[in-house]
Image (cartoon, rainbow, N blue to C red):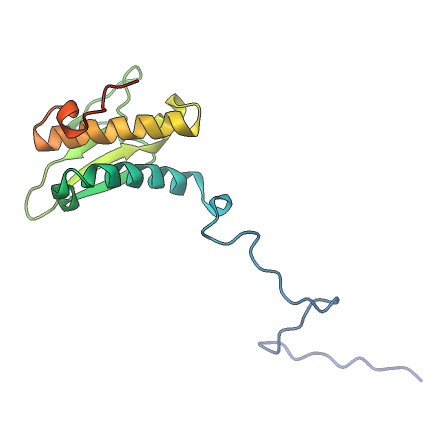
Length: 149
């Protein structure tokens, strides 16, 4: 006698465990582990670390938005650039009820920096320079350790 196979109803039904009874697999690493962070997220963390260092000394930075963009747009932020000179960051002054902004361009910075420490130092240098421009100060005033190697 043949065993008839009854078709399973389509649609949502009870989830089945895999054949070994271990259940569905979870993520490889929890989200707080750096392994799970993308390069863009890791770069944004470098910018935030730099801002956090400066905010201790300059509380008015809380009124400035810090953005990370992948690449600069030609003619963007009022800065013309050529093949020889690509901006690493820029500023947008506050106007019409909008907050001032500091922009750091991820890809040009990543190309110029070889390792994480060098990238972090370059990001901090860019943030200091852009904040100094917005505040009308010198970079050395914004961060006394600005020009130390």
